[in-house]
Amino acid sequence: MNSELIIDVKPKEVSMAVLEDDELVELRTENRNIRYAVGDILLGEVDNVVRGNNAAFVNIGPMKNGFLHYNDLGKVFGATTHLLEDIAEKKKVPPIDKVKEGTPLPKDGNIINSGLKKGDKILVKVTREAFGTKGPSLSAELSIAGRFLVLVPFSDQVAISSEIRSTEERTRLKTIVQSVIKSGYGAIIRTQAAGKKTQELVEEMMDLIDRFETSIKKLVRAKAPTQIYEERNRAINLIRDSYNKTFTKIIVNDPDYYKELRGYVADIDPGREQIVTLYEDDSKRPLFDACGVTKQKKTLFGRKVTLRNGANIIIEQTEAMHVIDVNSSKKARRTSGQEETAFDVNMAVADLIARQIRLRDLGGIIVIDFIDMNEAAHNKELYEHMVKLMANDRATHKILPLSKFGLMQITRQRVRQATIIRTEETCPTCQGTGKIKTSITFTDDLEEVIAQLTTGDKPIRNFSMHLHPYVAAYIKKAPLLGSSIFTKWKKKYSKNIKLIEDQDVALLDYKIYDKDRNLVELEKLEK
Image (tube, rainbow, N blue to C red; front, side, top):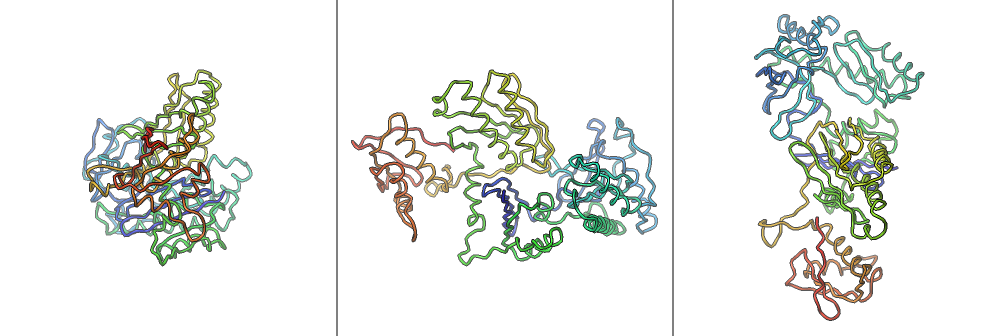
């Protein structure tokens, strides 16, 4: 499998697309003007303590107040409180291992009894971005993530990912980390650390400690609310979490990002920095267009997503959850029995759903309404298939078996808002009073109509398709080398297809007439 990372840098946002074997599997857009992001450490001020919610609302600056639940105060809340008190008194940052730990909080305690009150200063980390009317989620458990390690200040424990199963490797990694980590710090050894050399682990550990200690020096003069530690740029974070040997190309259209990414890849994988390339095109063609991302984005982010066999899914977002409805095609319903058809469609659609969950970064509660199946073995196989498809998803998730109503429930970690892309375009005729289907996939829609006419139950091989003159000219135009779209259609389906320019037809519409000039009525393709 070959993976490509495409990074489109614009003045106000950065968009990142991951392609696996030329298929779009991840798409993220980060606002460059966003003040705080997941992983940032902030000095906040408690605005309100709410007994009923067992939580506090923390003022963290120009955005909405952050939400800090009692369970997210963690084990180090007392230590960070003492750190702030020491800095306020002595006007300097004490060594981390000299900071008092404080009294551990009971697991079933109450926010009121924690001692936290309005006006208190508190160190917090952003764990989830703001959603709609909800502010960001916060945690007092501080940490800084690297590629192989996660540094945990005010701790003395070294944990290791359960995905590393070799007893020998687990012992080796723990021994390395414990031998170099400074007093007052703990660490989590990530899955990516397996097989790495001692030098790589030591260098990253020293870098993480240095970044944390440099950041907390700001506390001497800092006034809440303010940012203490900022995560590296979004592109580097994506590489940090997903980079592996399958990456064959990283393309970016910004010189500054290019230099930073090239340097980062050189650090984590020496000798492969040449995979980072700077996109330069004299025609000024957008990067996503040149790499085929735009068309896939328009195709895959609609409310309705269709498979090649005609089956489709409808994705709806509500305030509480995401709902996915599965529908079979008329062609599939004619090929086999009801039970076999339902099973085949569900298994095929499961692949699409797993890809869509990752692509759109759906989080929270996801309910999938599969086509009902009567056999328990089919339900079990579908569940196991879905678990296998979601195994490589980096987000924490849990999948429940199908209920008796044919519903599958998935809970998935949500750290940022789901990616929502409007695939409708403003109509050039009505100037925005209505909506049209996405134009980039219109020729694909027309070909599907032709295939439906020429290969259906009652095939029609002699007909004329009336199109807007602009669209007809585009379809008839042949490139310098090769055939036009229309020529390919005639060779593939029927040489008796005619293309007629008709000014009465809307820009992205069509009319089909048979050889007797009778209008052919057929279902319009929905998007």
